[in-house]
Amino acid sequence: MVAGHICLDITPVFRTDNYLDIQQVFTPGHLTNMMGVKIAAGGVVPNVGISLSIMGLNCQLIGKIGKDFFGEDILNFLKQLNVSESIVRTTSENTSYTVVIAPPGVDRIFFQDSGANNKFTYDDINFEIVKKARLFLFG
Image (tube, rainbow, N blue to C red):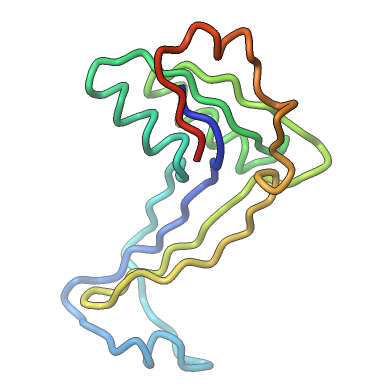
């Protein structure tokens, strides 16, 4: 079982044929042409949970997301991977998201809104499910 931080990662894909200086990327008024975008569930809950699932272990995911577009995207992503989840949905907080800026040759830069993760508490965890787990990771 993995409980804790869950978000939607949004990663614009930089062209690999045009290495940019990081100063160019963040120059006001400068346009950088991109090659698409990668969107995936992120954070410790999906990252660890999906990895355990790929290794053949049954894993239950617990986190908190908003009832919004990003939250729906996360749920759809998890369903496609056939991962069990007990995700709490709330209308009082938005789903967390991270914009990952990763130009070739430069370490990644993250812009994050922690959203519903800031309100994830003890009360959001179903301890009946936890009792059945052999391993519990909170991250």
